[in-house]
Length: 353
Figure 1 (cartoon, rainbow, N blue to C red):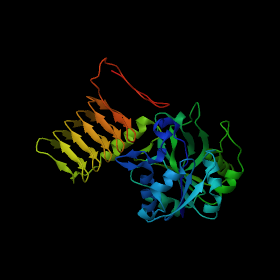
Figure 2 (tube, rainbow, N blue to C red):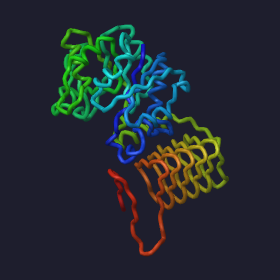
Figure 3 (cartoon, rainbow, N blue to C red):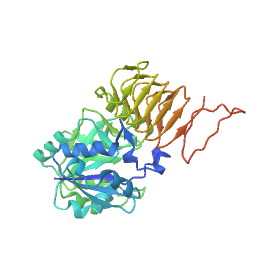
Figure 4 (spheres, one colour):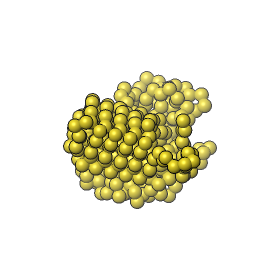
């Protein structure tokens, strides 16, 4: 069995972060989202992985390499344009032809992995197995209609959903999905929808098996979902301190302080992770915050946020529910006249109090 990981999307809902970075490499709990998927695939006993890449291929390839870090054999497959998930399957035809495979969306996270799901697929041998989760806003997703243990209908982002069962970003396919994908036409939005390809299997009398997951899953394409994924992953954090903490600082709860990090005259209340060589001075870092490596935090209060590598935050007396990109500077100035001074890229958002 092989795996196909989709990492070619533009990540428009996370702009401006994704103007300069692949959305699959945005960190949660100080680890790129994509890495969680690769770990799940490895733990399911799959070694051959094809990664669909687009315009951000250089960054993805630099981060993942040949897959050796996970014990994987990685092949990169270039998709010229993001024309739908079924188009991605056809783009990878040479890689997956004749094999069963898992298709894993690179910006999705499933807590607990997929090993049991892969075993179920191997045991039952359907033409396809789709993962489903009950969601409060099914109109945002592909939605399934079931009869017993069979899927009878799939609808992509319906205005009036027939159920609250949304397709999770992990699919398992047998070889017949290739012909099904070739049989469909582009949707109204100009894409080859994987829901249409799976529906073609259903219409041909093939068995499409549903699996409703009980655990936690997130599509991290939106800021609020990414922060929620960060919160869930940090909930399992094991306290571990390699960096230095001075005698005037207070550490409470599950806190990881990585090698070379320094905590000075500060309070850290976990779950929190502080990356390598980051310095925190005269600050409060509250629960569900992940600060990456080589950051500087001074005279600030930060909670429920993700701070990416190399950033500097000074004099922010309350920063929460925030995603700060690489090498960002957020500073408070005493210059006169007092004014907000900003340099913001496209699609930025700033809440001012």
